[in-house]
Image 1 (cartoon, helix red, strand yellow):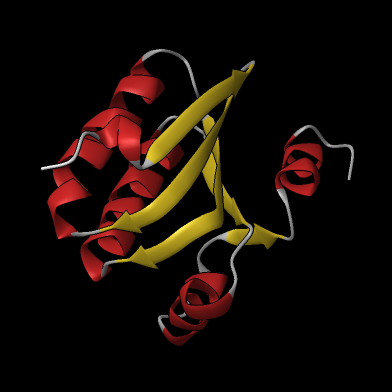
Image 2: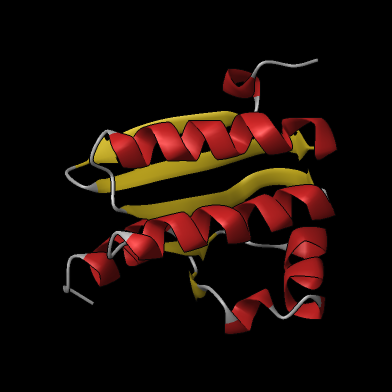
Length: 119
């Protein structure tokens, strides 16, 4: 099994966590991903910008995990927003109606601006 660090890169800007997904995130990454996000929430991150620009495949289990994490974030007044969706990831995102669940922006810069009230 791959390490979460191989498919997820993280940086922080105050209480905003910028999470970049890389390559394929398959079902085996579901639980490690939830633990990863919950650890960041416990460390004071309230908002997440998830950058899909380098993701090539997101399993349905990962989409489900993101809904779980969204619930956890919203319980403490936080949120998850997405950006960088394209091709297959964007198609699935829209088919599963996640565009009705998550705010979506074209890139990380625009997403962060919106969270900071600058956009």
